[in-house]
Image 1 (cartoon, one colour):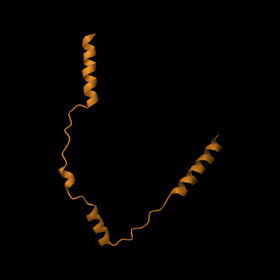
Image 2 (tube, rainbow, N blue to C red):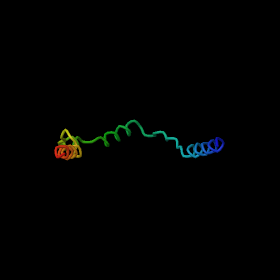
Image 3 (tube, one colour):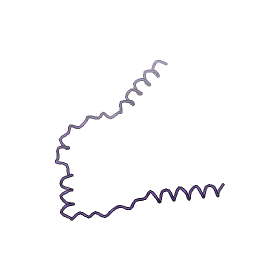
Image 4 (cartoon, one colour):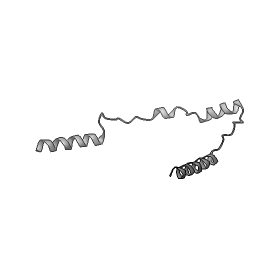
Length: 75
């Protein structure tokens, strides 16, 4: 059984090694990199979105507490 597992592990490792791709170096100039950063940066409009009000309890917790307590008082 150990022999079988060893063979299986060896196959898995060889498959994973074949999938590995080395990353290519960034050939852009520092000016191009800086320009790309500026272009991808958000313009601040994201901060103007309204925030959703969240209560202290979750929706499910509020329902579970109300139905659970009502069942206990009825008994």
